[in-house]
Length: 287
View 1: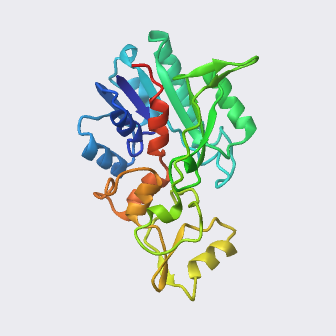
View 2 (view 1 turned 135 degrees about the vertical axis):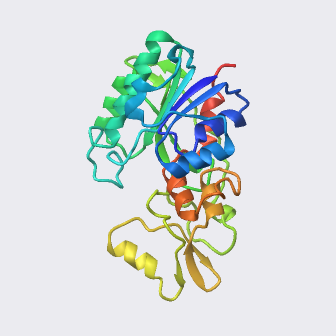
View 3 (view 1 turned 90 degrees about the vertical axis):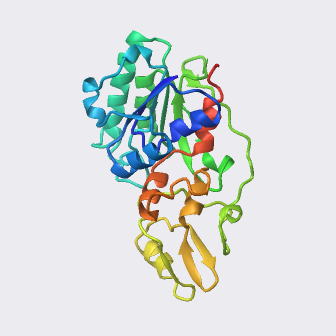
């Protein structure tokens, strides 16, 4: 397949294609974050970096040859964790750039496949706007089925669809519940949560630990009305998840992000896709 991946992040789409046995010919990545590009090129040196998504008309791509376009357009304006500016917010409105590119490819290749992902806490209004723009309504899948974290997301795709009385909907079935618990993925210590909270890009800028008796981190988060991070009691300290545990929460192999600092890895993992979910969706691509 020839693939264009917008907001490519840590290249989860490419890894998922490889993992389900779909051969990639050319993979074009639109990404501007330097350490995301570094990680992508480390694992897949043949990735073609094309830069800023808003400059897509300048890209040297044979658009009619594109078989699949991927988009994880920014969710900050849609998420309950953000300021709720909505789909027309300064960051989440980049979704409409994806729509422009998709429509351009469709004129040249009507059979092009697409996948768009965004947060499960998006408002019904925004979900409706996005669905009408794409001509298909999403499936809602929580990563808790295949990993140890709660991560509720919408996925819009024409990889597999069905028609209802009024609409076309994404017809990807729910993956099998693998029963992976938070305690199953930690490298040491004890956790009270059955499942970890959804990883957030902002939560893992540094390794945080403090004496159990003080529990400073929890008190600070609660006092600010914020989601408490995923904490682990490890001997005489309470700590946040380490880099390997973050990788496992998103379904990646241990050490996948080892060329990066924990802060940079956490930024990409917290803002990225859950690898086993994308693999599950790609398994429905006709070979």
